[in-house]
Length: 130
Image (tube, rainbow, N blue to C red; front, side):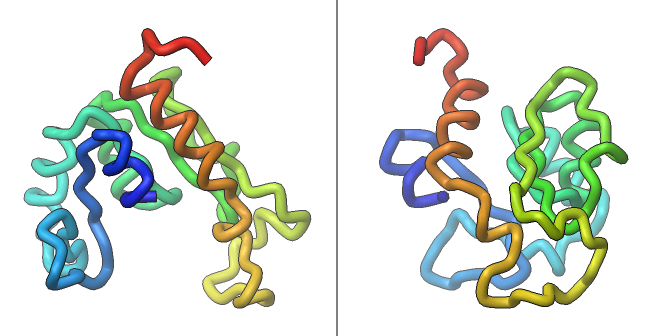
């Protein structure tokens, strides 16, 4: 996703569990304090996230948020008209499990990346017609 967006000139910061040392655009989220995390998110124009505290912080900061749902129920989070919910179409969703029964074919990997890119582009440049 990051590579595809970067090729299209969309600047990204990735909050990830593990920092990729060769890439200055990755921030190791596990080492960020809640205050620093909220500060970084509040400086963004758009947040793309799973159903996590990062998504909730973005919504609280009144950012556009594209929230990805797989194992968690999308009905429990409101984005207040400032974003989009991308919901996995896997028939076992939402399962609320920490460990997927199908680790090689989990619901989050079933989300169509090119469809997600289209949604992101609508928020980044809303004047571009389809």
